[in-house]
Image (cartoon, rainbow, N blue to C red; front, side, top):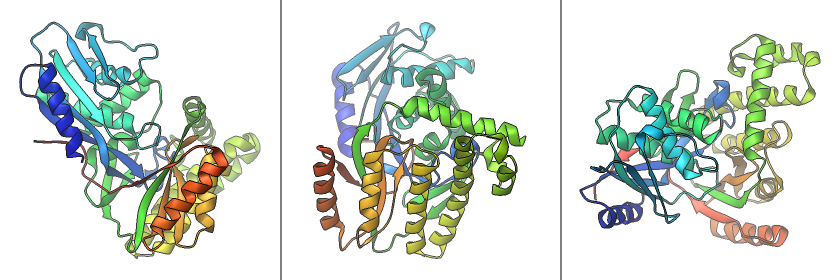
Length: 383
């Protein structure tokens, strides 16, 4: 958690509104392995990180609700009786979505004032949207004593994303941001929406993220297309989700589906298996196997699921050839964002310098590098 951001948000609230605010921090997340498995009822291995969104909130005695997006230098005022999706609403739709979904549960909210700010790089695949949704859901739950469970809150956040932001996301991002544990990743079963924390010791290797600083426009429509392909195959197999498919059952219908759909479904089946193999390797402290599974995951995302891009592939290919880097893959929805890398600490500085230089030369733009720690989920904070 960043105390600097919390203080900044508190200060802005005090200068903008009356009263003492309640403070909440919701982290972004990384996913070690298990990409695009969540909306297939599968397994993923996410963790909350030490970057996120801080919120200050208090009840308002006026007839409207006011939100200040500190980083954007924007303010939005709305009436609780007229909550609806905005065209090109951006950050507003995530907040309106949470408010709207809470109200759909027959819960009556009062007006409130809110200020928020974050340090999750936008478009980096670290789930800034889930962090914002969770921070608002958690803050309103506390402020109005709604008695919602954490599980109910993440389902509200997910519905906000579906119905207001228009992205049919799975539950992984919201879950990891809400339930994360310091120093651990969560083996998340996306069907039962339950998890088991596993301490992950990377020994002499460090976890670094390299942000391509690109986000290709394909992402939203392509995401929804991939989801539709998975649902088509599940229907053909007469199962509720690809979680229940095997390579053998998929092979049996290969002649009845397109090669594209076959490869996408095969990727999901293989990626689910990789998550379980990753846990096994982590429990045995088999660091090299962890790295190999990351490389395999990227190859599937690149050639089968087809959600990678030139910039991501370049970074993973460079990492693969670099002594001291044992694993790398794209992370998140795809078409931009970050790669996640396991780099030996003895070559860390040199690797960062060289990969930055090569990337700049190739794409005429800079990549950004972040070191992240596995951290606590959404929580109340005090100054």
